[in-house]
Image (tube, rainbow, N blue to C red; front, side, top):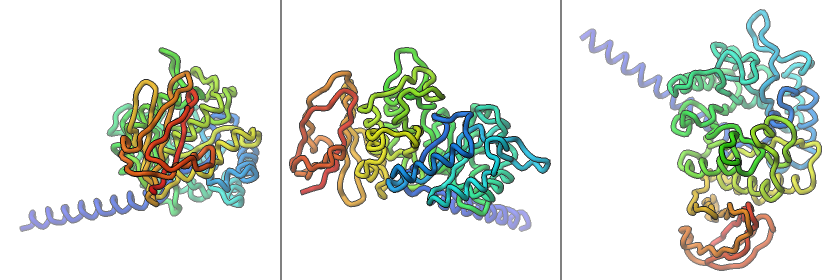
Amino acid sequence: MLKTKKRLTLLVAMCLLRIVTIAQTSDRNKLAPTPPMGWMSWSFFAEKISEQGVKEMADAMVSSGMAQAGYKYIFIDDCWQGGRDNRNNIIPDPKKFPSGIKALADYVHSKGLKLGIYSDAAPLTCAGFTASLNFEEKDAKTFASWGIDYLKYDYCGAPEDSATAKLRYKKMADALSHSGRDIALGICEWGDRQPWNWAANAGGSQWRMAGDLRDKWQSKPGEPGMSIMQVVKTNGDLAAYAGPGHWNDPDMLMIGLYGVKGPSADLGGTGCTDVEYQSQMSLWSIMASPLIASNDLRNMSPQIKTILTNAEVIAIDQDVLGKQGIRKVSDEVWDIFVKPLANGDVAIAVLNKDNNARDTKINFVDLGINGKCLIRDLWAHANVGTASSWKGNVQAHETKMFRLTAK
């Protein structure tokens, strides 16, 4: 009888723990109902990140119209840390952030924006700075006390196996949940352990599904460094894993960098054309990806600003139904994605992967779309007809993007 009671008590405890875990995961899924939008420091500033630089980017996000377009986060990436104090509290570099992170968060919040920060699930970060392994609860409470809204959590210096990754990310997610503040978690282990299978249950709002992206359209044979096309190829197969609160993250937008010296210019990152940058915006949006700019917001050309703030394209990315576009066609020349939208409309993206312009005709029924539709070109901002098909010319590396409304 005593053994039976012990077993029953253990079973009840396990069930309660399971219920608590499910509740925490559900609460964390509410932190990013649509893909996060913002700006990340790494590609432009790298180790030269500073308080002044972050403030200037926050100012520019507002003055440029980016904030009004939906970009809300300012993300501080690696190299902000100054070690730990005599109580083991993580502290910022006093030269880079003389006023401290709390004052910076207050400044960013005063602009109507949110502040993200960076750490790593190991003793040191990718750049060799203080990280959070075995200090998860302490660091989460510190981040909360500063007013942090998001944590990008890297995986440099950590074991390669999936089991350890799951434990370390879950531990940090739980610590954030206990911190007293809503802090979203971005899991950054580069897709090596198939995080789409487990990252949401570990508490992640988004997860990197591939390696670090470089500022290039396509890699040369044998060239390292992820290209836009390589990431699209991988993420195109992962639509089933994304949804409200949990997103596949194909890394930052390279839009407007033009091969500027820095991390994104490594490993063949010599820059892209405006057509290719516009394609990245289309493809990231149809794939319901986080839209994280990485260029100099203080000095944008009119064309780059137009690409980054296209309200009709952003609306596809931010659609509340939260469906990642499904790749319906993929061959040597064409990729075609189809994304259902909350109001019953459908978005399609037509990518020409060839190095030459191509004419094409797309019958909507072949994409699972029946009947005639009003066809709206989201880059031309114009209705281009009512029909059951579309035909036209697509430039080399261009992605046409349409919103279809049944008629």
